[in-house]
Every structure is written in structure tokens, then in C-alpha cells.
Length: 354
Ligand code: NAD
Image 1 (cartoon, rainbow, N blue to C red):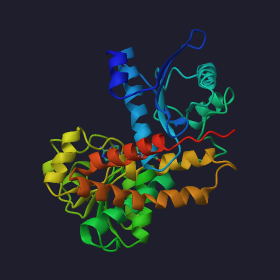
Image 2: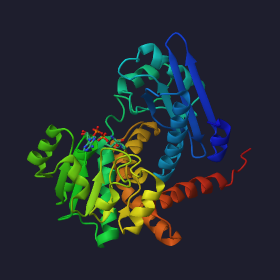
Image 3: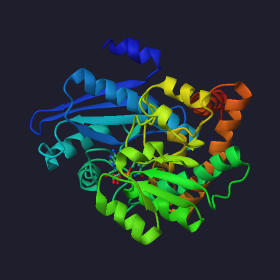
Image 4: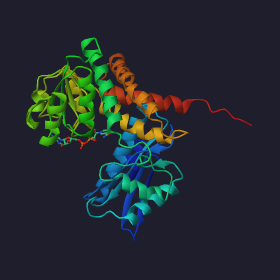
């Protein structure tokens, strides 16, 4: 890839290649934008098939974090780290300590956290070398319940738009993936009186939801075509694609999964079908809100994170409002919301203080 051209196209700040022979570290830290503050984004470990693929992933994910953090009202920029390697075979104390030393060299411009392929234990090694690591055991803990809370309020906002009321009592919600977020979401929905239809590739997860929450179970390949009010993807990315779109029988798509649209044009297609799409990075920001709460002066206060996750209700309504006003699909409106905040705050006058 033409790295500088790519960086110029999306206005990246910095790309750091980290190498350490003793530990075998080959990692990339991409910092997209620090207009709003230090750049927060997870550290992913994956068996990338080429260096180009790893660099592109780091750059793409870093930019995604800028938008997610900005739209969530956080005073944080966007970045991401990727470690090239097999998370089941190539991990060691030395590897993550070496990465921690690189994070430290950035002096707080980048704050790392757990992501796919890394764990709290890995973060603890990084923390031995730098204070710029969040989401540790003694801090905010598992983000899934807060993510689920944000998704629940996002679903309420979607109902307000589609049905004129945000009361989910009696609404049919089909949840794909009843894992950490999906199960917690199902609990909130059940408490609020919604009807649940669930699926998962693991039967245990489904059985738990059936037994404890009275959910109706369907097979994994049936969930897309289920007649429902809300389809809530809480498993995989790219689930809204050419094969699935025509099968959907819902009024809105609102769930926690990252990168739900396979391509942007699938967001346009949902709009044409009259299905409201609640942009994923708006509705699933509870996780990053929870981690970011650790960085507040005075440390992590759960109630504050909960309040911010609940406020995703307003963020979803704001995105819908922008979409209507500017006559654009909601996925583009989400970007607009983030860009407006970054651009406005970048312009706010800097006063000289003597
Ligand atoms: P998880 O692994 O605990 O749950 C995902 C569930 O989906 C699993 O139970 C898995 O068996 C199931 N699944 C996988 N493929 C499936 C398929 N084809 N059909 C049906 N079920 C399938 O993960 P999670 O932490 O609950 O996250 C769910 C999604 O939300 C992911 O896309 C994640 O990236 C995203 N997300 C999570 C958080 C968080 O705080 N955990 C925050 C933001 C975004």
C-alpha cells in the first residue's frame, strides 16, 4: 500500500513500527487524530498474512476509534495497536513489556487497552512499563454489561423513531449472538417487557436465555429472517450484506457488533428498504465509555460510566436527526456527528494566558 497517500487521504497523524528482536515483537501503532485528546484504542493481536495487511488494519481501526470516541462525547482521539503473531502461541511477558516500552515512548499520545486477541493479563505486562494502559483488572473490568446498557438505550431510541414511543414492552427483539453483550442486553430487554428471540452457535448460551429469560430460540441461520421489530446483531461483523438484506423482516437494526455493514452501500440499501440502521459505533460505545472512565481524574466511578452509556439514547436520536436534516443515511450521519464535534472543538479559540 502507498502508506503516505493513505495517511494523507484520511488525515492520519502518526504511524509507529515497533520492533524488538529479543521478544520477537513486531507491532504497529497507528494514531489517527488527537484533536480531542490522547488517542485511546485497543491492542489487537492477529496472525496477519502480510505486513501491509497489519498496517492497513491498524490504520483503519485507528480512524474508527477517532469517530467512536468523538461521537460518544469523550475527550479522546483515536488510535489502535496491532501485534503481528498468533495469540495462542506467540505471547510472552517480554513481548507485551516490549510493546509497553514503545507505548511509553509516545508520552501519553496513545493509551492502549485490551482488544481481540489480547487479555487483561497482557495489559498488565504493558502496565509494568507504562501508565498508558486502561481496562485493567482493578479498574473498570468487563465492559460488556455497560455496552449492553448502551445498546438497550439505543434500541429504545430506535423504537421512539420507528414506533413513536421508546417503550419496548411487547416489542419483538431478535438477538444474534447471546454472548457477553447479547445476554446482558437480553436481561435489560426482558426486564422492560420485550419479547426475545435468540440464537447462538453455542447451545449452552441459547439454553440459558430460554431458561432464565423465557426467550424463544431459533437456529443460527434462521435469525436473519425472523419477523421482529428490532434485529440486534451481537455476534459478527459484516452481517448486513447482499445475502442477508432481502431476508430481514424488521423495522430497525440495532446491536453491539462492530462493522455490521459489509460495505457502506448496505447502509444505503437498508435505508431504501425503510429499515432504520442505528450505526454500530454509536450504539456500542458503552465499552469504550467504560474504559475511558478509568482515565477521569479521581479514577473509575461506575455511576459516571453508566450515565454516559444511558446518554447513548440521545446520541442515537441526534444521529437520526442529522440524517433527516441533511437527507443522508444514518451511517453517514454518524460520521457527520463525530466530524462536527472534532472540527468545532479544533476551531475553539486558544486564549493566551500570561
Ligand atoms: P462474545 O464472544 O461474548 O459473544 C458473541 C456471541 O456470538 C458468542 O456467544 C458466539 O458464540 C456468538 N456467535 C458467533 N458467531 C455466531 C453466529 N454465526 N450466529 C450466532 N451466534 C454467533 O462477544 P461480546 O463481547 O458479547 O461481543 C459481541 C459483539 O459486540 C462483537 O462483535 C464485539 O466486537 C462487539 N462489541 C463488544 C463490546 C463489549 O463490551 N464486549 C463493545 C463493543 C462492541
